[in-house]
Image (cartoon, rainbow, N blue to C red; front, top):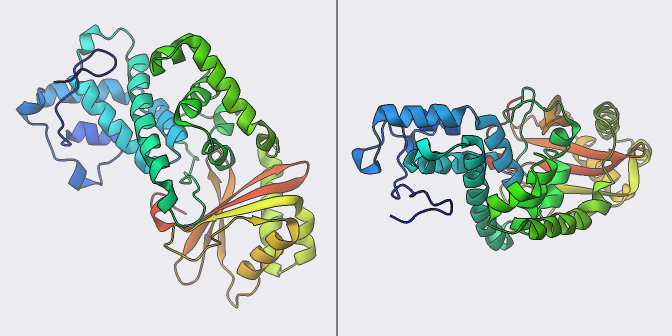
Length: 337
């Protein structure tokens, strides 16, 4: 049995988890992945497995939020927590002084491995790739009362983080969203504190210019988004162009499953015509349901034929600077409304 990087023995390769583990990962409904018990070959009794799940469950919102920020996919984040549960089940938990720190290390490393594999396969994705939108009222990631926590969940920022390497993204998330000291981040990533500082500096520089393009507060963002959707419904090109920045960009993610723009739509005139064409040329307009997506104002758009898409915006200086349209049905499976 190979030890993991923390020195604890990893459990055997067995995808079976307990019902408690399925609850922990938020996957009760995925019955094909969650049989009722771990066999003795996994080295745990049902009671022991339940105790391990209860201990991890206490930190679940934070761990889920960490994995989601690293991956931009709630589906993948839940899978990471399921894997982390198996490792936690096989660890010498009595020897772990700080479960939260230990579990953060496991989740981060598992997420980095998954992120690297996904980045290597990204070339096969059809069109732009956007994060999976998550309804956050209430938030499955715990309270979002701090601005840094809310900002670090936005589709705009998660989209920017896709340009970072896996280690850069991990350091940025751990430092910015969770305010961990570099010494602790170094322990999680098996790097020096100086190296982690450099990774954070590099990551911040790579996204700094574009991040300044979404500085509006939630109330202003809601006002702009509602006005934009009303203008799109009316086919009012002049009003649409007035609501967006001259260099606005719209990204649409259909994943090859639904019709969408294969390339980003750039510029005020093209974005105005794009949304007016979608919303304003219909005999029966779509139903717009306001929602809080990833901590920020958004909307779920329902078409009469049953299709839908999630819309989020970035704004600064009284104008919309970015629009994020997710229509891939796989990324909307958990989104209600």
